[in-house]
Amino acid sequence: MKLKLILSCLLLTTSLIAFSQEKQPGKSKEHNTDITEKGLIKISIMYPYAEGKTFNMEYYETKHMPMVAGFLGSNLVKYTIEKGLSSGIPNQPLPFMAIGTFYVKSLSEYQAAIAPNRDAIRADFVNYTNAMPVILVSEVVK
Amino acid sequence: MKLKLILSCLLLTTSLIAFSQEKQPGKSKEHNTDITEKGLIKISIMYPYAEGKTFNMEYYETKHMPMVAGFLGSNLVKYTIEKGLSSGIPNQPLPFMAIGTFYVKSLSEYQAAIAPNRDAIRADFVNYTNAMPVILVSEVVK
Image 1 (cartoon, rainbow over the protein chains, first blue to last red):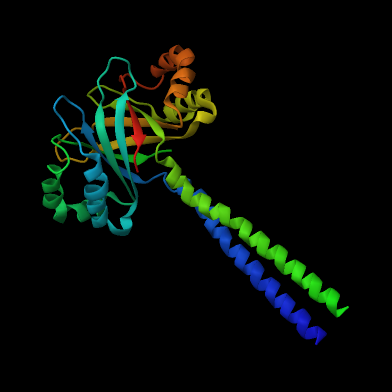
Image 2: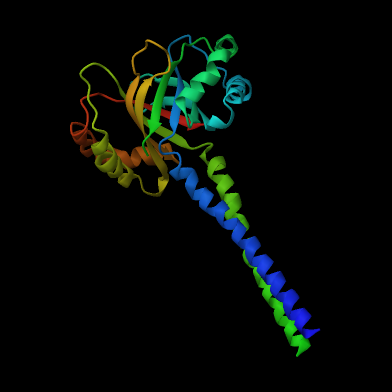
């Protein structure tokens, strides 16, 4: 009886230790989020500001970006959206109204995924902007 | 003796449960890293590409950006560096050779921290580039 009790106690503690250690990869993954961004490819779609140019952020955030993100599958690590506020240089005009950025593992996979959907993506532009975007492909250095 | 054994077993399992639950905030913090970027202010220093323009990424990464980051204190959440590779639009020139970005909590705090150091920052430009940067202040929407 005493032995049985010791054994079940041991079994319980061992499984609890295993359970608590299972959380460790989750913690190191948290670190990895920063580490693994280095080397990723960013595709930044930048909408220049100019007089008469408009941008519907709500449509962009809720419809356009999720649609494009949906084409990218597991190659997409994350995507971000930022809203231009001002130029950081006094008396200079706002450079960009908005920037949407896809962080991907492979540029060629990105291009292959976008190609068959290019017309659908372009046709959606009129729903949120009358500006022609500048697109920068860059690599995360840090 | 048996009671003592049961009690120490209970104590051990309780403390192990407490220990394993202590990891939970770590896990939810991992999520928060993404959530808290929303609302942050980005100051993006963008170096346009043009013929004859140069950029020394090694100096920028190891000297210039750490120097500026050092002025920002706890207002700085993180900073990133990216290297421009190409335009995402065929037959278009590379828009930017490099972009350095500071993610801060407060724009006014950023401005107050930079103001007394503006001359030192500008004097360092010639050490890595002959291009005049465009600076975008934006807000993280997603």
